[in-house]
Image (cartoon, rainbow, N blue to C red):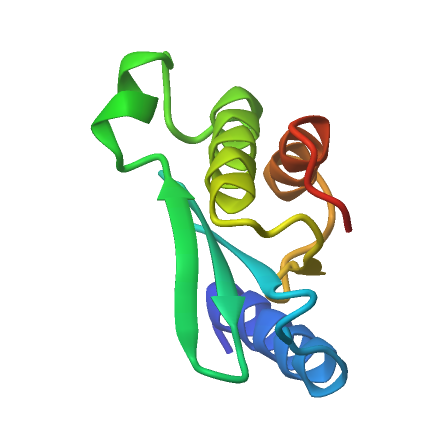
Length: 122
């Protein structure tokens, strides 16, 4: 089996194992993170209704203007700060953090710390 297939399979196993245990409700929606090679994405999802309350990513022009690159920890931190600002504007103060099977390290950790610095509680 190819090395990348093994890594993807392992991430999906972690993702399903974690998602069995956590979901977002009205009091604490779910902050989910997706990390690709070039970008990072964050969404706040209300699972009971299946709605995305707010989102942020490095694809947005306002985020790209402020950064040198989109695949580093600085970019992830900016995305975390931006999603926290949008969540607070949507009256969401507490969330459940879903790392989506990614290890809590590097860019995923930077995004979480940026969101916490701006006032999001998880």
